[in-house]
Length: 362
Image (cartoon, rainbow, N blue to C red; front, side, top):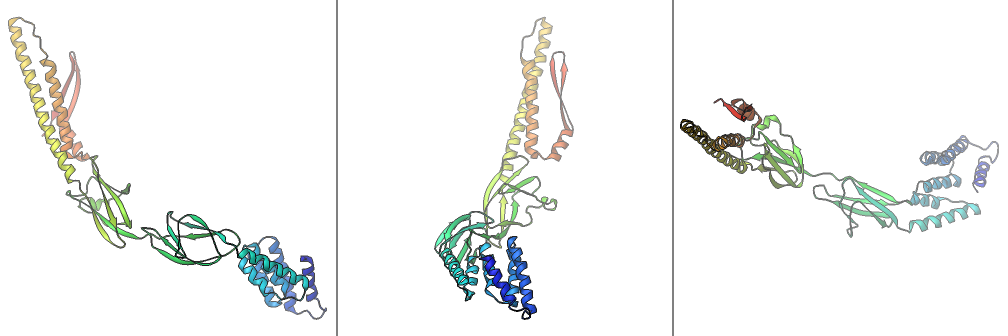
């Protein structure tokens, strides 16, 4: 059939050797080039050449090839529209056109599979104000224009019409745009120094210029609920939630003052324990040496545990003092380093065991 149609085309072009116009000759050349592109599956290029050829020499053969191109690209509606415009007196051509029209009409009457994909999952999608889905999803739908609405908290609602067409499964891609507001992080302490901040488990970098202040610059965050977590120098975190509305600026407070007060209280308790323990240890050592001196004068052998418990209690007191120092200073690295320079503990071997010593500078 293709060979017959092409022969008809040549006969139309060569009615007489002297009746060909330059337009007809050029149309023949364009048709041949378009046919080559068609064989290479380059249908877009073929369509351009066929349109140009038809404008020069409008015959059915060119339109039939154009309809075939649309069929190959899955554009069933366009192919059917082209077939319906073709008029021919050739019975074979008319039969083929009628068969194609019937075939494509049957295809178009059937629903097509539509896959809807968004750049974020879980977007509520309403089709024709009736059916509700959550992306990504696939659905069988009739061809033609349909209304879509896409909604998700934290994103702008999109309403759009989409024309469903084609023979192959159709993919409808939609990009949701975030709606954002701003949050300012504040603290009930004197400033933000040493405070680590996380929003939704992601660290927030606080510029050094804001570390000596009690609040940060505004941070852009997505609209909706968020989790704020704050901690200082390894202390227990303060966790809370906050909600941001579109184009709003809210303040989220890191309430660490309560934890800091607890740390101070524990620090002073540790100081008291250090003093009592060191004092008791010192008393035991002094008592031991007094008892030993008396025993030596009387020529007796002293049996006592004071010489063991005394240093142990002094060591325990020193340890409690170190703990109290960290609790009272908050574990600040600069303060710790300076404190270590003022207080230097040490352990030394001796004939009778291990000796603990400490030097202090005030």
